[in-house]
Image (cartoon, rainbow, N blue to C red; front, side, top):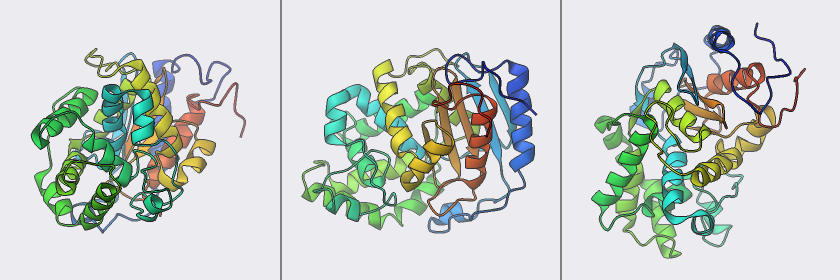
Length: 328
């Protein structure tokens, strides 16, 4: 067992590589047999996922990687893309405009809620629920759909440090079942929050969700935000420090939907989940942790991923609010 020490607090770097490797191994062994949760069946392309798959990975801001299990397996990024597209758009439009045009507050309602829009004067509340994500994608620079898609796909690839590809089968599957998102886009158009055609906005968002990533890719993406927008593998400054800071703030407040407060209380790090079973968690200045496990809880978050993140947060001193050894 890796034991927390006085040095394992929210400032500084990760513990030495031996401790990190031991913690990763322990985490995998402890949670790989957890069978709580269900594989989502409302998206046909996700329904056939093997519920026993489990991959975990940590990438430090120095570029060191530690992984176990199915960390190289590819799966669709889904809603995790929201956080990184917001970071890219925030870099383009600035701190104040991003807050005013998209919002940063938690809705307290499910990720695909229409009521959240109506209850808040037709406004999107944050970029990590579907309404806010559609509005964010519509803000991608470019005069045409193709230019906007190029901006998003190149940006997400830069975060991962490699060219990401589309799972065309997953895209077509979701495209046929995204009537609710199309309705949300039309509602946003009626309130004047998007000017792009609602169908094109929905296509843009659906396509970004169908990009293929691995657990290791997500850890690199998280580590990029952890290091102020600099990719630790490629050295590329993907976004500026201000945009990185703002993306992390939004992830801390909203990254696990209506369970975000509980997540922050228990684990204490910015994070974003996806319905394919991916989860990325960031320890600012230290690195990114990612996991993949298709079994989800009622809020749409990976059950094993949450357990793994909580364990590693305690063992490796990644909780932002920890100021010394945590005993419970």
